Amino acid sequence: MIKNLEFESEGATLRGRLYLPESQATRPPVVIMAHGTSATVTMVTDKYAEAFYRAGLAVLLYTETSAQRRRATAGNQSLDSVPRLP
Image (cartoon, rainbow, N blue to C red; front, side, top):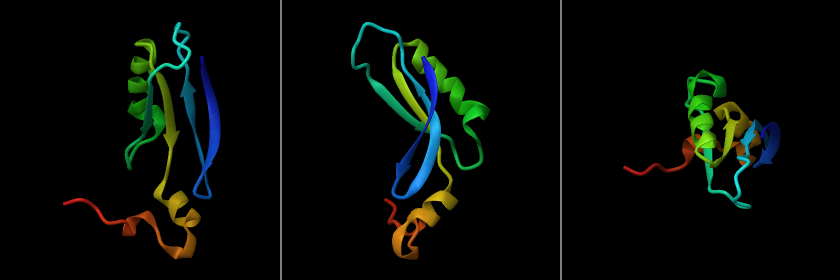
């Protein structure tokens, strides 16, 4: 089963798809995916999600934009200011 969904994260509304396999496992392993910065979920990432789904994994594939995160972050601090590993 594949269904569209939306959920809140740090004040931003994120939208995506939930792929739930019709396997015998009541709690299948889950892969959480988001597209790259210059793509959408229907350009390539959905093909990977479908492959995982066919292999019996649940997949949460969602769209996130940095603009959504910046608007949702308190105190005008964006995720761009989060320290990165070297």
